[in-house]
Amino acid sequence: MTFLIEKGRRLIIAQEAAKLLYYKIARDYKQAKKKACRDLNERDFPSNLEVATELDKFADEMEGKTRRMLNIHLRQESLHIMEYLKEFNPRLIGGVWRGTAKKGSDIDIIVYSENIESVYKLIKRKYDISKAEYSYKTTKGKTEKYYHVYILLASGDEVEIVVKDLMHMYEKRRCEIYRDYITGFTIEQLRKILDTDPTKKLIPK
Image (cartoon, rainbow, N blue to C red; front, side, top):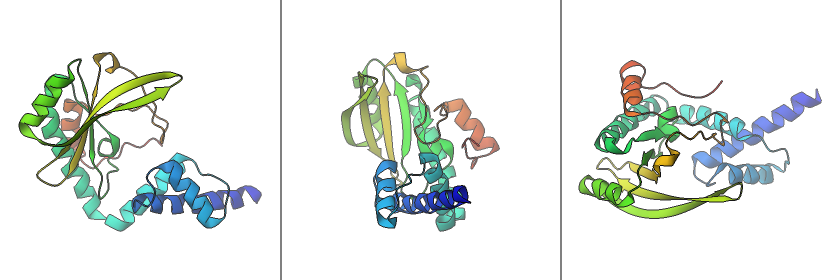
């Protein structure tokens, strides 16, 4: 009985955190869970996976069929961008890859090159760059630097392109939310999913 009560509480917290993320009241999962616990006067943190599951359900409830159409549209736009950047081995990740994009979601693409300037110049030749900057991530005492290029499409959709060194092309990185490996889509894989099952969700069971 105690387990069921605790499970019920975690579900309520996860649902509240999901709403905070959906409405962009919280900027990330950690902040959303903290605020949900504080607002509900609870202490038991749900996992990121529990929150992500409720967020996906809530987005489906709020957006219905338009959400499925949005995911198809964003995947199609991603394919056009990736084909343009094909020399840099682009890979689609994030919510558009998983098929969990919702209203306000952007497109996340990784490209691989030792020459950041060549990537930047190619992007600028075709797209409107709104911002470009470096970011730093420290893992197990090791700090890595990545270059981010943000573009705005004619449709109004936003795209974040991360430039990584070639040495990172075959690295395996776990998702902090779903705890699986972030494999993403290559151009050919994206073409295939658009041809066979364009709204398919890639969420581990």
